Length: 488
Ligand code: ADP
Image (tube, rainbow, N blue to C red; front, side, top):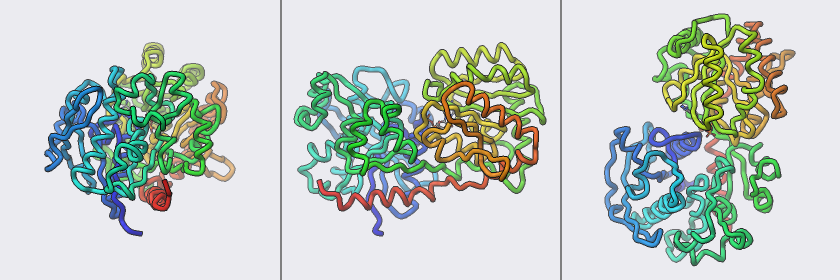
């Protein structure tokens, strides 16, 4: 099939600006699409953080001093380019200091909606000013979700976009970008008002993500199970009805992992390397990890790892309710990396106080340490309440670290429950979101741990699964091609 021109619009991109899986996915998707011969541009904001990490940027000729009307005034911006590591897809940064020179990626500021609408306009204007006609505009999450609507309205006059089709990917339905209806004019959407959800406008609000779901030519989300779940009352976060009406257009594609970045045989972030054939380095990583986080070394006790945003989604209530029993009873270690809601931070800090020889908690975001924990742990905990896809359970399997997960979203699609009879499976999967079910899954992990030959088989099963993007990219290309014939 002919190569495509694909514009990706995302609020995050590894390694420049990341808070979660979205960054890994937008970067890897762009990189692997480019490797498959497609012409890809990934457009992201030029956050303060991007500059602070010393990124080398150069202005893109012809894309300086551009402007758009937004927030009741003219907003100027320019496009700067950086070479993404190992990728032939350039990353285009939108330089608009008035919006993006702030501490975090996301803010609670009153103009948050404007910030990401500027990103969307900038991406489309950059296409116009470089006379680059994308076949596909692929918008990620609520931040870019107005792109499909704008292509049908604001930019529809331009023949450049005549053959352009839009895809909206939902990485997490809980974040929708909901704003008061009174902001519609200020956002320059007065002419689009009749295309927004009319009942919700009457109720005084409108939502970026909902608008995207209404108007995108194609919809995708990051696992097959999550694609089904978000059409239900339990997981639909209010959008289940709309998603059901568009279900023929909604495709679940499980995320891949960057198999070069996350390879225990060559990972530059860890000091000892290993593979399924040569496992010795894993024991060395375990010792190195425990030393680094100042816990007593051990070969016989399992090390449990957590690397996560600490939010209600991730299910740490279950760790709160069920894990102390193990810490009291078993010889074991727990290493936790992550920050977020105070109640979870306080809980892990309390665990350290209560079990100082068994628990270490690092309340930070630390890329390198996340690789150490994947490599140095024996078991990885992801008891998520919901999980659109999840990446760490796949990294874990690749690193021979056995995941304990709840059967939800992408966790259900990527972890196969261990079956002692057939010695098949790659982790411990539990069904219900309650402490007892989680407890039993951890209990099972201890049971298998005591039989080290079974444990080795379990590790090797996970290490042998191919979660690479190479396997996924074809599904996106298929989705893109299927939209070419969609009539507006
Ligand atoms: P989500 O996008 O919901 O946060 P994912 O599992 O899809 O969850 O992706 C999370 C990504 O962010 C993973 O690459 C994980 O390693 C990384 N991550 C999360 N918290 C931290 C942290 N405190 N330090 C380093 N990396 C982190």
